[in-house]
Structure formats: C-alpha cells, structure tokens
Image (cartoon, rainbow, N blue to C red; front, side, top):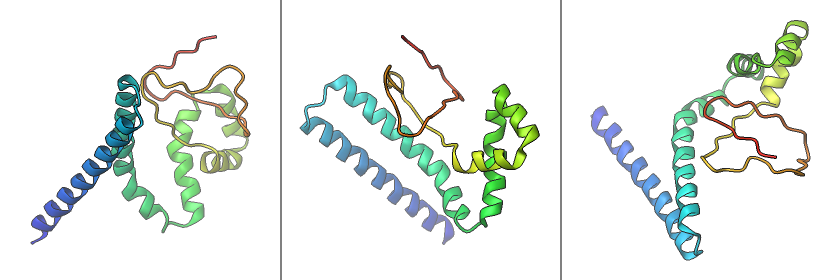
Length: 142
C-alpha cells in the first residue's frame, strides 16, 4: 500500500538523519570540541539538514528544467530580495537581462547560526561578495 511505503521511507530518512547527527556528535566529542561550540555546530547542521530536505525535491527536479527556464525561475526567486537595494532595483529596470543572469549565477543563500562570524576585518575573499539579511539579525562590530 502507498501509505505504508511512504511511512517506511519517512522512517528510513529519519534514521539516516539521526545517524548523521550521532556521527557528528561523536566526532565533536572525540575531537574535544568545547560544549558551547559543539552545540552551535550541531544546531547549524540540523538546520542545514532541514533546509536541504525542504529544497531537495526542487533541486532534483530543477536539473530537468531547461537552462532558460531556470534563469527565469532564479530571477523570480531572488529579485524580490535584491530589489530592497536601490542599485539593484534601478539596474533591473535598465538591464533586466543582466539582472536575470546575476540572480541565476551570482546569488546564493547562506544559513548562519547565532554567534557565527560571517567575516572579519581584513578578510579578502577571492571574489568580492555582498550580503543581504533576509531574516534574523546581523551585528556589525568594528
């Protein structure tokens, strides 16, 4: 029956996740990672797994979608966020095709946990980066 199969798949997936988290916990303990850091790492890993589950069906199916459609899709997904910045809002009006490429090739989500350091003074990434906070808070200290 379809319901039994679905329930079995859910149980198997939950067991795999539990094994992954258990392995991580064991690694952190064996590596003598301080408890405050270990908790943050585990919380972030659990959140990342949940996000991956939420996005995974979309990602797998999107591989089958044509490149031009993916470009349009990424534009629709990312442009509302970028429009909060005046530069991107104006650039979208003058060069929408370029902004489609920006949304497709240059935008990615980064998930952080409380206490994570996104960058430090003097950091020079190989490729210049810009961050826009979608939810939560970001504190900038100098």
